[in-house]
Image 1: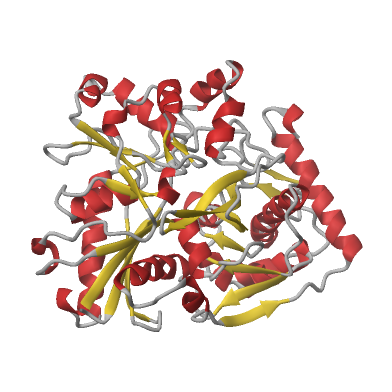
Image 2: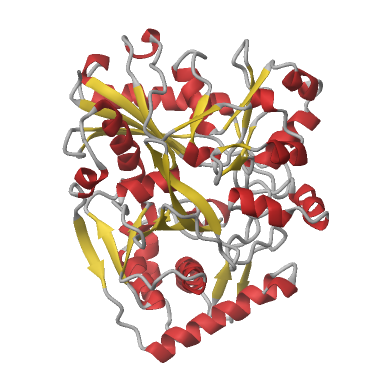
Amino acid sequence: MGRFILAIDQGTTSSRALIFDQQAQIVAVAQQEFRQYFPDEGWVEHDATEIWESTLAVCRAALAKASLDAADIAVIGITNQRETTVVWDRKTGAPIYHAIVWQDRRTAEVCRELNRAGHEAEITAKTGLLLDPYFSASKVAWILDHVDGARARAEAGELAFGTVDCWLLWNLTGGASHATDATNASRTQLFNIIDQCWDDKLLRLFNVPAQVLPEVKDSVADFGSTVPGLFGSKIPIGGIAGDQQAALIGQACFEPGSIKSTYGTGCFVMQNTGTTPLHSDNRLLTTIAYRIDGKPVYALEGSIFVAGAAVQWLRDGIGLIEHAEQTEAMAAAADPKHQVYMVPAFTGLGAPWWDPDARGALLGMTRNTGPAEIVNACLRSVCFQTRDLLQAMQSDGCDTPAVLRVDGGMINNNWLLQCLADTLDVAVERPANTETTATGAAMLAGLQCGIWKSVEELAGLWRSDCVAKPAADAADRDAKYRGWQAAVKRILAKPDIA
C-alpha cells in the first residue's frame, strides 16, 4: 500500500489537490480557479465539466510536484462545496445543465410557496434544514423543469443527480460509483437525518424522482477506485465529507461542544452536538457532522453566504484592492472614529436572518470615508456575522465556547483574528495547519485504509499556531455590535423577521 493520501478539495472558486503523509502533514498542493457564471440577478452557476477537468488537472499536478505516482497513494479523500447541484446523463456522463451553486437564489419563490402551504415545520423536523433555495432539492427540480425533456428522462432512470462530491466520484470511477456520503446527503433537503434515508414525502414535495438519487454511504467507506487511465493505475477512494464537516474533522472537533468557524467564500460556524440532533429555535441548521460505522454524529451550523467573497468583491468588483493580503494593513489604518458598516448580502442573508431577498449595503459613510474604512467595514462584517451565529447557538442551549477554532483563507489575516476575538469576547485559535478542510478529507480516507485507527488518534495530530485573546473594551464592543444590528435591519427585505 502507498504511504500518502491524496485529498481533493473542490471549492466554490477553485479546485485543489493536496497530498498528505502519514502524520497528516502536507507534501504538495496544486490549485486551479475556474469560471463563475452569473446569468441573472441572484443566479450563480458553474460548468460541471470544468469542475471535473480542473480537479483532474490539480490531482495530476500535485502528484507531479511531489514526484509521486499512483502506486504511492494509499487512498483518496474528497471534500466539496456543498448543496451545489449537478444533473447528468447516465449513459454519456454529460451534464444536462450548468451546476447550480449553493449561493444561487432562483428558487426562492418555490421555497416560499412550500412555506405558505405549511410544509416548513415537517421539512425542518426531518432534515434539520430551513426552507431556502440554498439547499439542493429545489435546484434539482428547477433543472428537471427547465431543460427540455429532462423530467421524463429522469423518471425513466436516464439521468443522475449529485452534489459535487458525487459528480467527482462518478468521473473518478468511470461511472461505476453513483454515491455520496451522509454529510452531503444531509444538505440536499431530501434526506431524513433521523431515519438516515432518502425521504419519500420530501421527494414528492420537491417533485424529485427517486430514480436520480445516489446511494448514501458513511463518510468513511469503500467508494470504489479510480479508473486506471486517470493516474496510471487504480487508487481506492475511502472518505467523503462536505467541506464544512470536513473542516470540523480537520479541526479535531470530535467532542460535543467543540466548535469551529471556517472563513472561505462564505463563513460557516459548526458545533459538535454529539449523537443526538439539537433542534434550533433560532433558524440555525441541524446537520450530520460525520457518520462512521453507521453511527451519525450531529452538529448545529450557522451559514453566512458572504465572507471571503466580500473581499473578492473589493478586488474584482470595485477595484479597491489588488490583492487580498492588502486588507490587513488597510483595516488597521482605518480611522477608528468612523462608523461605517458593510452588510454583504449580495445573495441574501443566511443564518440567523434567512432572508433571500435582502441585498447588500454600505451604511454610515461620510465625505471622509475612504478605502481603508470600507475595507475595515468589510472585515468587521465577517466578525459581526459570526457573533450573530454564536449568540443564536447559545440561545439554542449550546454552551459559550472557551475557544473558537478557525480556518479558511481569511484567517491568515492577523488583524481579522484579533477583531474576531474582540467582537466575540472569545479566544480564537488558529491551527498550525490551516488546510483543515482537505485535512479532514484525508483523515476520513486514512481511517478507511487503516493509516489511522480512531478519531482519538486523529485528535492527537492537531496542533495550534496561535491564539488571539479578547482585548476590547466591553462597552465599545457592544456599541459596535448594536450598530451592526441596526444596519442589518435597514436592508432586510422582510423586516418582520428581525
